[in-house]
Image 1 (cartoon, rainbow, N blue to C red):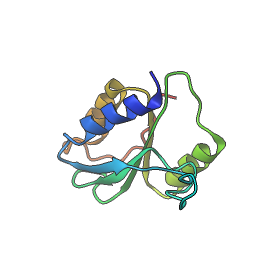
Image 2: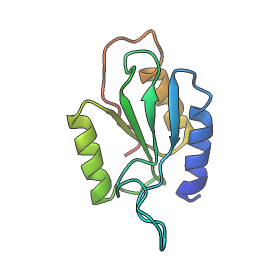
Image 3: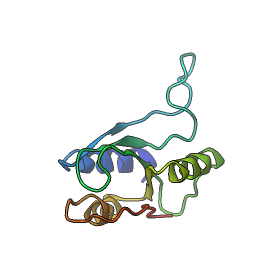
Length: 118
């Protein structure tokens, strides 16, 4: 399975989570057109509407199992961690379900940095 169907499935799942507002981010340049999001920007971005991450920028990088982050993606990851944002690498909807259960349910109050699937 390529990353595109995994991204779609993960995004569809995330859109069912009331505490999150997320969307697909297209990084790089469209052939012959403008630059979209900067290179390395996570595949899915958004913010938390409630809970311990309320108002924080969220970045979810979707990778095929066994695939590594690019250098540009590693830079984004580093900057997001440094700036107090939430960043996670996921390889499946199940990875995302586990991440949501741990980090995006209102009963948790201790902030943690998420990083799954790498």
